[in-house]
Image 1 (cartoon, rainbow, N blue to C red):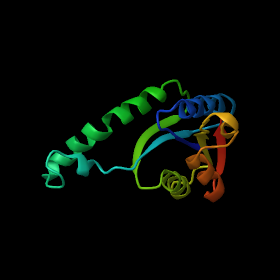
Image 2: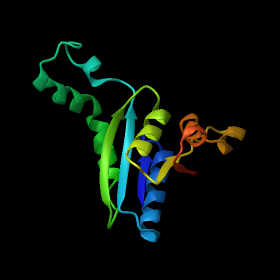
Image 3: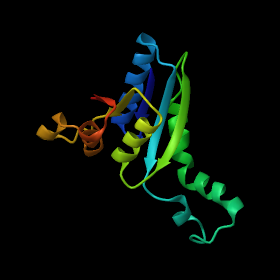
Amino acid sequence: MKIVVGYDGSEASKKAIEKAKELVSTCKVYKISIVHVETQDALNYAPFGNALKMHDVDKARDEVFGDDLKEMQEAAKGFENSEVVTKILEGSDPAQVISDYAREEKYDLIVVGARGTGGLKKFRPGSVSKSIVDNCCTSVMVVK
């Protein structure tokens, strides 16, 4: 089984990571991808706008996305007997990007956190997790 976990640094996404770890301990999971969707292009945040030399592109990406990647790598610790990949994906719609990634890479399951917003809304999934459930052709687990 291949699992992709949506991660945005929130408590809900950290719970999704923990649930994926439980799945690894009970199922044959041979690959886990922890993905974060960044909706801002690193080049827009470069010191001189889009006027970058090609060798500066990776440096600009590291400056913008570095903290997210470090958080994901820290969250990825503790998976055993599975290949773990951390990846930052770019796109304007996180739900669509995660769904497309899972479909294109032939993942069996998407694990995402539900967003508790307080009051009666805490029982409903967040907009990204709801959109993934509603529109994805891959199985989805929403973790509370």
